[in-house]
Length: 127
Image (tube, rainbow, N blue to C red; front, side, top):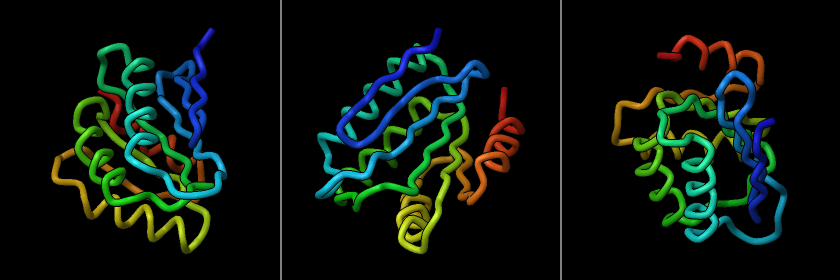
């Protein structure tokens, strides 16, 4: 049975195919550095020291403060072999594109409006 970790800003689990999912929760206020650190710790726990395929559903995501965005941009190098973001609105597209612009690493990242397309793309990056 897979473990699910619930944080203030989302739900994180690893599915039977090994993909780590982060599903953002609708919250009031901003998504801060402490939230980002809590989510990163959860992903690292579920990854168990492996590099994983990461699927992030940001359709419900609140605004991220700059420190949180920077933390994610740096942390993703440690545990993600590829990252797909599910977006739903113009607002989440702005968040997603900004996140992609921050990536100073070679981790493949892409935005999707379809979960199925995101999973198919991630599977292409399975090592």
